[in-house]
Length: 116
Image 1 (spheres, rainbow, N blue to C red):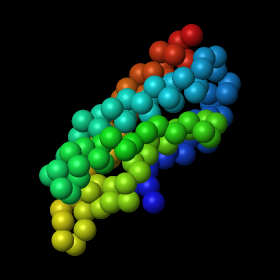
Image 2 (cartoon, rainbow, N blue to C red; image 1 turned 90 degrees about the vertical axis):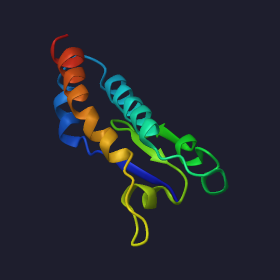
Image 3 (tube, helix red, strand yellow; image 1 turned 120 degrees about the horizontal axis):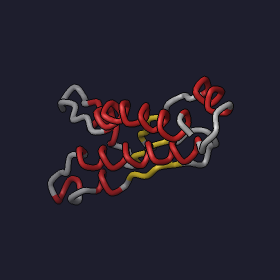
């Protein structure tokens, strides 16, 4: 089981298809930046429970599907850390990284697609 976030860019893809530039390059850059930000925010547990960064280190950007990227965390406990449980408070790392990227994505689209 893995935990991931994906964004449906269907409408955006229709707009981008009409513009010059490299959509996949922008999407990949955005996803890589989100992953970097999420890794900085990922809680690192005690050596016995998390192996000092197991959650952080078992994440990647998946670009297998055309038009969108998936920022993915592979450990099965990833959603429990992000969302919390009835016994444990949420310790979000992925959602804040996505939210922080919003303005940068808009800037990339304007600079690399619209103005070229």
